[in-house]
Image (tube, rainbow, N blue to C red; front, side):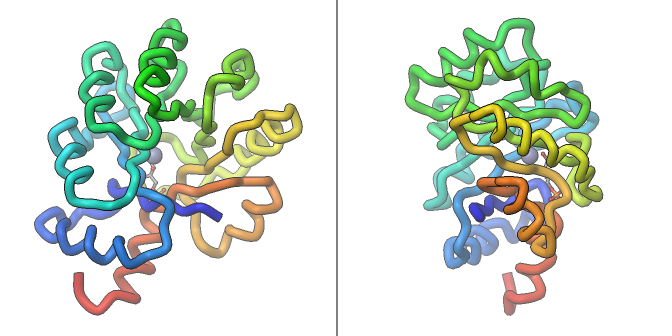
Length: 206
Ligand code: DX5
Ligand code: ZN
């Protein structure tokens, strides 16, 4: 199972440099950065300057999860940071195609985040150009929520309909759930609260 910790769940910002050094020793697949504008979701997190700084101080690829309405204004800033993938919510824009094309022409992968209330069927016409589906198992905005496990059916749906990209799950994932997630065919997980509680228990000092 591929694991990317969600940095949103780590709040001791003055020790962030130490955290990045500890993460460098972990077997993780990348870092998940939740970007929030206070409008699309009721929380604020990670502007472009902070994300650029994180990119400079880690060897891991960055997966940017945009929970913002203002894609027009901000997308270019995040493209210039050269993350591995930019994941956005299709309902955040009226036409997803220009954004997908804009991301793809820079050789950055593109992903769709599927809100718990968003019907995954509506994303099907774009599956051939979308590298990853990020199935949200919490309402976006905060880490530390309990998983809404009924959304895992969306992974099964995408796999059964022959979606060729990867299906990841974001929200309330715990290590105890890994076997269950594998049965659904999940390729990777985002882990916030559960990852950092375990890491902090295992690590001498960050
Ligand atoms: C929620 C974010 C998630 C969240 C995951 O809006 O997209 O990435 O930080 O954190 P946990 O694992 O604590 O739910
Ligand atoms: Zn996320």
